[in-house]
Image (cartoon, rainbow, N blue to C red):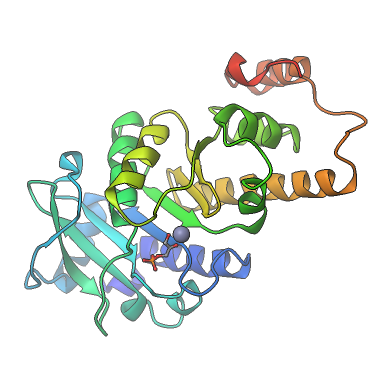
Length: 275
Ligand code: 13P
Ligand code: ZN
């Protein structure tokens, strides 16, 4: 099968275009990675080259040894992915030590995988383990409202979780484990990758203060849907705070407990404190 005909490649490209249309990807902002299934690697293996050199990842992901990923390129624009996927994305293989990668397809005009490769791969490693291999997508975007909130709310998991849950009834059903927050850090390296992947042991989404959001999910729909839900909720919160910060009414801790019963989700009590 031709790589561009593979369903996962179509899903990858569609997410990039959808994200750009949401205004989450100014310039080269944001990046996306997908852990390719062995059966999918088998279908496209004719087009994969083993000739490119191994390169250091910048961290160790032993749990991903031998895995293949589709990843956006560093400095590449999400708006261009749909026009020329071969120039703006790549497929990489991880070596047996989990410390190196090589490009097997794509980035035909040169370049390298996203500068956030350490964060993507460390998140994948944590999520693969935590979900028995079900999570395959890690998505980083720069959604406006979530970023705006990181200037005015305390940078605490419990504050962001409770406030975002409160803005839309179905939020706790979409991200019942809550949302983590990483204080401002230099992006693109191992340190921010370690901090983010630590939070991903507990949550499916992690905010980077004054920068953006990372989301993890089983497939492109669920991962895009999570990003979309969190940002929509943040938009409502920005509007509420702008209209009148003293709400007249809201969803209470007791309301959340009732919701949890009917929707059969476990909502941690740490986020249901009375205010
Ligand atoms: P890349 O172009 O290297 O993917 O970086 C974009 C970005 O959002 C960094 O956090
Ligand atoms: Zn970014």
